[in-house]
Image 1: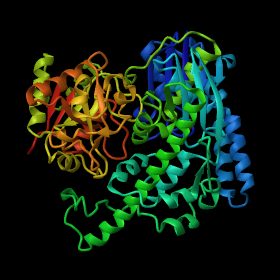
Image 2: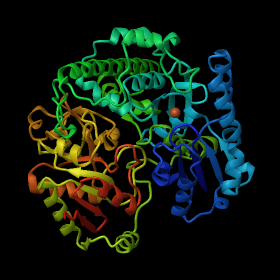
Image 3: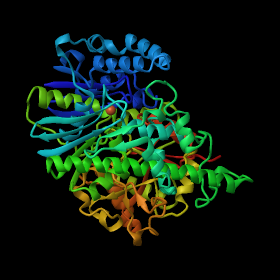
Length: 594
Ligand SMILES: [Fe+2]
């Protein structure tokens, strides 16, 4: 039985294909369309899933959309009418796009895939999130917490998974949304909403949470973990381009300019920014203020999530927790939930945001609606498209790109390790691309984490990266605890997907300067031999050569672009940056210096 899950028209569009309840392929549309966070109909991602299984649309048994368009339409209609006439612009734009695209999802799916109406099913937004976590997890029973911006009406749920069923027993509703609260601060701090949330999290450790009291003025939490935003401070419910209002500005001061460079007195002025400005001290003071605001919203977000998780534990008494929704990508908060609540194990799958809704919708249909037993556990993120040797060879020859093909994997890995230990920055593409926003060793840029200059070297070579964006370490799973404070590391699934941020061990901070963030932490990826064989062997080799089985791993893309997919994307990124070496499966391309 083949079931295709589809999510689109809000954040990240994606498709996921199950065969008899087991995932065959899953990908976000942005990797194919090359439009970051592409939310349009995921035509290319669907085609990829079908090709991967050798199917046509007519072979599908069900096509499942990740939410209920009419219910969402109802929310937009109701909220805009309540805030009319302020919301006139939202209302008009929403009407146009809903009339053109969204209410006709079933018709679009039928005509694009050539499937009958009876094969089209609709899940619910948060049920899809919940299913995307619990039904992929190894747990037979677990508490479930979903938290995001907003689905149809719902912004968060508490639930329980048992066997192949899920019960959601409490929900929070729009406009009271933790995702939208975080996004308002993301916009205030000069970053793009739905894109810059990571930057807020990365900036927070540069600041002190001095403004938590002020943040608690705009949001209050109840005993049961639910919370309410004071809507006097926000405008996302009646505006298309402004998430916070003048009252918010009166409380927190002027917003940060999106063009401002980030540095503080502590960081100094990074070399790759050029010559320090005359008013360095004044600008660093301003940045410090914004870093303090980032630290404050991050702290309150963590407290809100801890409140929810603790309540959920009190209600369920279960020791395992599955999380999904965009907020579950907040890896700093995830670690606090692990460490500071009675939950002993968490499960978060790598596409915890709306893209993952495609997977959740398909699993919901198979396991819950059709009542079939659970056949699938997600143990890695490599569900995207791979590039064949022939495809890479043809690309390189047709474009006259000088290259070497290295047949022996041993020799290939030795050469890559030599480059890394010679302070070179390596673009590394192999196998199927990753599901979700993180690069996990199949479309990654790699470097030596031991080199204290490496942060600056990577920032300078791969231009336009901000200094508050930390570089992540990939470590051999069995050796994690020597370098990072994560007891029982191998059993923690979120660490496979960089969804925990943990302290680098005190004695190892000097060993790993390039991946140790300003607060002494690292957003680690534990790498397993069975699931990532070639990447594992590379890190193993690096460990044999240097004594340290850890590499610096950052996503293979330029700022503002989706992570690379094809040899063409990878070569383009390699050419536009000052990356030294590009490895595409068994092919090595070195930069030719004139
Ligand atoms: Fe969502």
